[in-house]
Image (cartoon, rainbow, N blue to C red; front, side):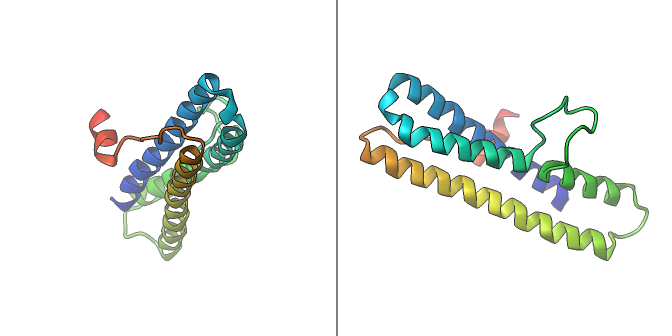
Length: 139
């Protein structure tokens, strides 16, 4: 169940990163003066997303290196297909994946916080993202 929950949490992190990116892209069109604030953050979000999920290939054939989502899915399938308890190696991988997910969650929150501070200085409105509850209710 932990691995399943991690998959949901990761989906929420990616959703927030995508929503931030979309909002920033729209703001840049409306207010080109924000470009110097927005472009580095968009680049940072793109790099982060590439570390979380496969963004190349057709997402069907394994054409890219496995990212966090694929690593979680790999451990999940190993545990699900195993007749016994999870092995020590699987539990160790789970611990590492939990840390990676927590780091990604924190990074999105840091980006959002820093961005809103910069937007306030530029006298622009904060970016509001949907909550976990809203995210889960939308699926």
